[in-house]
Image (cartoon, rainbow over the protein chains, first blue to last red):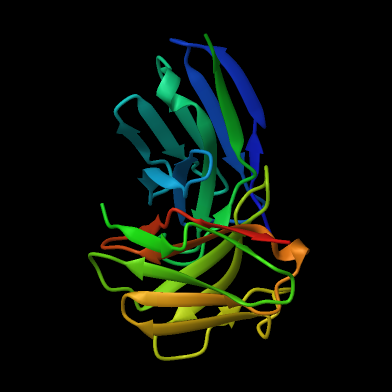
Length: 112
Length: 114
């Protein structure tokens, strides 16, 4: 099945640093969602984007829906140890409550 | 946010046996649920869409006779892996659309087939 391309694949940063990751697609999506997955658990929704060009924040997280509807980015400011995990973008054809296409994931590790 | 549960959280079975995994929406109703499979260090891949009151819709390459889906009620969908083999060992995750325009995921079920 189709997957969205996420980059970088992995990141090693120090606590307090900012993080940026992005997600690109060859096709258009009308909804972009960002999830975080901890080991052995299901994904947890971080931010949902429904409109091209939309910029949305959730605490230290900021995500944008690309104007072409083929990409999105997620920024995390002032990273903390609990930010460790795998971040997935997901594209939805319409409203995000339909079947999703997931990105390849970005694994974030924080170096003490 | 809306809560989705899965049972069991992990299961170990012998090759050739069948395993049933339940997905429940605890505080909302879901006419549609989705089943995903995730292999180690990989992303989630959609297997099928479970529809309450009608047949499930399977993604290309997913054997419907091997992965039986039953959406018994507005809060319960089950995935049965029939005649499981070691290559079916994976992390199975369900999701359900919650209120609004998003969906919520269950905690996953880890299946190990010996």
